[in-house]
Image (cartoon, rainbow, N blue to C red; front, top):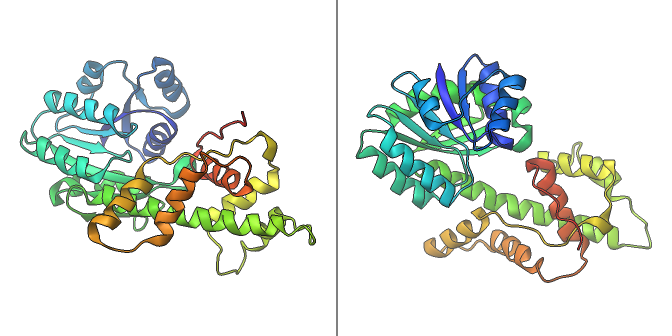
Length: 304
């Protein structure tokens, strides 16, 4: 197969590399020519330095995968490609877009005969070697054509990926996934903070987090990454307490309100992200930043 990847950042570049390893010819485009050239050199992708060059190198019908920040950038690119692609081509949005936007964009492209897939993608900076969890929404014929790519990106051909439903459903499932992630992170940060706060015992939270990785009920990949980060040592005084929220947690809370479904854990975890903008020095917020960096490579803000 031959396909295009637009956006060669932390996720897009590694995904392109994994696809190449799986035998796919990937033509990559990024706003930075230097980034394109680096992936050409390190991963063996074919580089493109303009949209015209990208599209000219893809056989018809084309498959084009966008790995861009959600919001205005993705909107602009989809509208632009809607005018450049041909009937029968497929456009995939692998970023964390709002599922309402994906439904709208899918309808826009369908009117032009262009297939659309919204691909919720989890796996962070570890996906290159471990594979990505792919939650995709699309019409059945679109999903069938993209399935060979999903099998390569996933941890294995028979697991770690699923066509979950129609357009919009992939990003909806990923939104709920990230809402759950907020709750799990908050629970871990609160528990570790309590352990650290018991001064009489002088507990080593790196040791305990590592202990819990084996045979305990709370073992998880998130715990693994947290334990490994703590074992390496953390300069707590250098970490800002403010923890970013990237949008999915808010969308999950809104969805819960619209459905009338109580989600106190997920909602409160989001509220704690807001509170982190005001509090000065709680360990729990810094632990959240350590976790976000461990699984997604999100930057840790320096203490001002």
